[in-house]
Image (cartoon, rainbow, N blue to C red; front, side, top):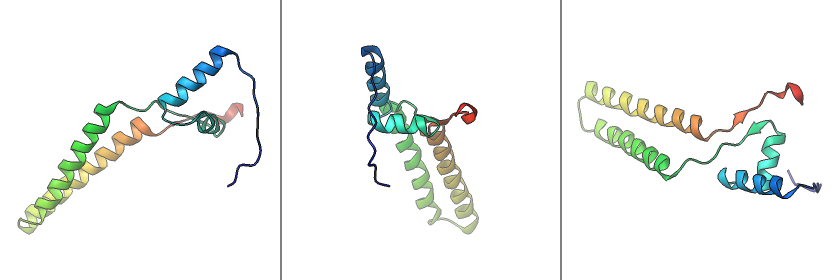
Length: 109
């Protein structure tokens, strides 16, 4: 959807600095940050590099289990595939918890 309506707001210095800091911490532009707030979401701060390194490790473990599943008996293969699937689901759950913005109670809107 093309954005064709411009809105201009006035802020004091502290408000402008706060918006800039929060948008930067969430790894998004100030405009995107404001649009998410209007849509009823509170953007989360982006996790540090350790989070992403740990997610990469989990992904590697799940991928390695998937690869090893092809080298074993059907029973072992099934167990390894189940474990790989569980690890990938855990990874998705953790990413949702730390990366997905919180939904705000919209009763006031």
